Image (cartoon, rainbow, N blue to C red; front, side):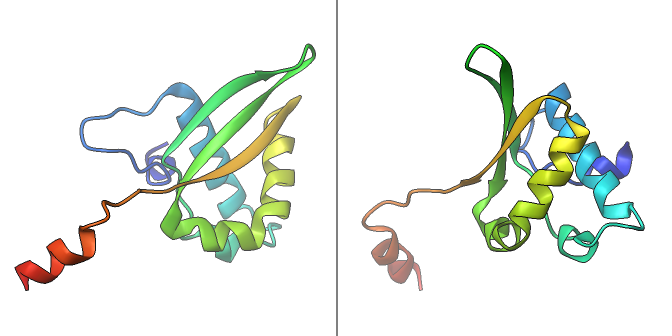
Length: 115
C-alpha cells in the first residue's frame, strides 16, 4: 500500500479518502501488471482526488481528478486506462478530469517585477 500512496498527490495536511486509496491501488496494480500495455505511460501518472457520484437510477460513477501537468499523458492512454479501471471497479463508470489553476490577470506582471 505504501507504493500505491505515491500515486496520490494531495495538498499538505490533507489525508486521502478510502476511495482515493482504492483508485491509487488500482492504478498501481495496472502499472505493475506484466500484461499491461500502458505500463510505461502510467509510471508518471498520479491523481489529486477522486469522488463517487450517483448516475441515474442504476449506478454510480467515479470521477478521478488528475493534475493538469499529467493530463497530456492521461489523454494519450485514456481509452485503455478507463477500460482497465472499469474492470477493477465493478458496475461503476469512470470519468477522468484535469485540475486546472486559474491565475490572476496580473500574474505575468507580478512575476516580472520580482525579477
